[in-house]
Length: 400
Ligand code: SOE
Image (cartoon, rainbow, N blue to C red; front, side):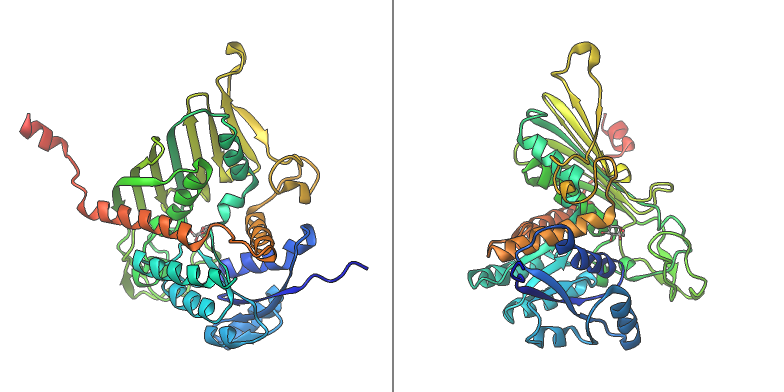
């Protein structure tokens, strides 16, 4: 009888889409990976008693709280998992760390650089006492993106010249879609930029091992007013019928595009939108180097495209690597080759890496300091978009 690993007792704040994805990960990680600690779904917190009790029953949590502060006060909880909107991240994470609880905080880390800086300082102090914090940029744990990073590090594309990142969704194409927290700047911090553009920024810095040092941006809000009171069915799909006819202001971007410079020399082009009809979750990343290119599209997430200039001239072309071999990151613990993984597996791999780091008493990644770096890029993009001077063609005609 192998000795039972110590428990990692988890308290989660929030139970919507991210709560469901994180709960799936906490339930399954130790059943497919050998972990030094065994996660336990000890308590879930949400303000609405009946809703959080339903969520607990559905997602497998042992108890409920209606205030996140009660989670932090409990002696039977070791880690706080923050799956709430961005305006609550700083308050919850700082209180949890100061109470000696490890923290997993959904992305983006915060709604401002100032909040992210304070969280990072508190996390650094907590780490000195063996209490660790991680930010939930889960896409880097998609096997094909982890393989992209490995191949770049192994020199497969040579010197990086271009980084091209798009994150395209269409669930906000419908102007009758209701006004929810993701469109309220006081709750979400920004729109497509922080919600999905942050994933692209983290993934681009992760796979290249380089940092964005400067940006030039345009941000746009296509639908400036939306019906209040309704909710989206799931995230995409049709809106519910109970959206009221009262309209409210959208205070965030529908779409953002920006150019970027990386500290190691490459230049980059980024795009994030939730209004690209027909694109459901097209998180795309392409790296072009002096010896080859790598390209990924989450809508084809079990494959990585690789062009190798060193191939025979007559046989050069993008190879479509099926990322399901035991040699590939994470996949050896799941199914035989060719059976594939899904969106939820990135969250499970996130728990695997977090719990492994905690069991080894080492800093899990991305740390709050690394997530602060993404926050700085988000702020620079917003700053550029508000101050950027677009050189119109009429300017050129007048000045010529
Ligand atoms: C909505 O755009 C959303 O749920 C994001 O918030 C998630 O981070 C992304 O993984 C899926 O789309």
